[in-house]
Amino acid sequence: MNNCAGLKMNKDIVYMNRAWELALQGWGRTSPNPMVGAVIVKKAKIIAEGYHHYCGGDHAEVDALKKAGSGARGGTLYVTMEPCGHWGRTPPCTEAILKAGIKKVVAGALDANKLNGGKSLKLLRRRGVEVEQGLLAEELARMNEAFNCWIIRRRPLVTAKIAQTLDGKIATLQGQSQWITSAFARDYAHRYRFGFDAILAGINTVLKDDPRLNTLPAKNIKKIILDTHGKMSRRAKLLEGARPEDVFVFTGGAQIKKIKAQVIRAPLYKGKIDLKWVLKFLGDRQVTSVLIEGGGKVVGEALQRGLVDKLMIYAAPKIMGEGLAGIRGLKPAALSKMVGLRDMSVDKIGEDILIQGYPYV
Image (cartoon, rainbow, N blue to C red; front, top):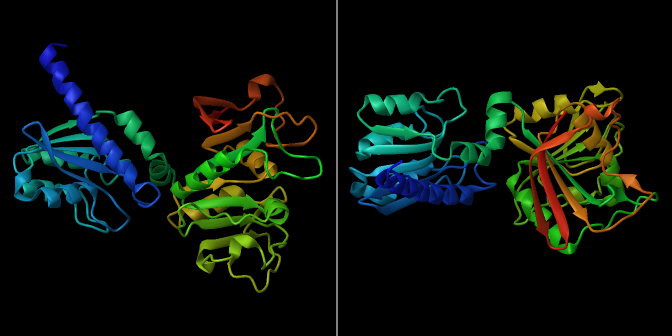
């Protein structure tokens, strides 16, 4: 690569990284739409920026084009995802791009939606717009992994979160679990919930810990409870301040009376609520991401059935010895059948360690 080409690529990466930063400002607010950021560049200067603020609002490209006004003509648009070329809640972004007189579009990831999938870029090329695609595509696709999972597989991306000791325990044999990780790590995990559409827990966790399952900052996150035998109490803290339409209690047919929630009769799988059915139910209602927060049996079953897409393990620098395991029910017949993690990352969160990865067998 010659120096001029290298300099151009460096500038492209700078502009696309800025669009990426903008996209992340929509984190936790755009579902079921993806996070998207855009910048408009003219004469080597950014003249306008935009991002998708919330579902139903202007897309990132339109947000930036409105700010640029007539100055957008002849400019280059950097956008983290291929612009949409179809009508949805808003008009096609391709129409706005053509009307504004954009000369060139540099797109990161392709849109996983089959209505686009490169089609809108072909349309722009046919209409005389110079198009480049693929810059930081892998990283930008990962940013919208929940949207991509939902749009392709029609079920939410499932992340299982575990807070445990170094030797894998989440509670004493007597059931005491509060608190294993530090206050700093708990606050971090609480805020991380904001990026999800729903939090899921088993009834045993609800009865023992009585969690609120809220987010920081507060939002109307959906709360999903697996309650095979109808033990849910109308006094549970997770019901306080929650809208009834945001709480789903899945039961195997037991009657739960006087509870401010949606009680859904679900089929059973080996005597428990069929989690695969629940995920399809949620996906059909535009839930793109679910965070499993308890307990060990629920996480174990989800892993066993191949329903966990991502693991988040908070490990406190403590040893318990005898105690309740963070993951229960897995019984590999051989070491080669153990669940492994790929694409791992390890971060220090206060005094604790956060391990993230994608399960495989």
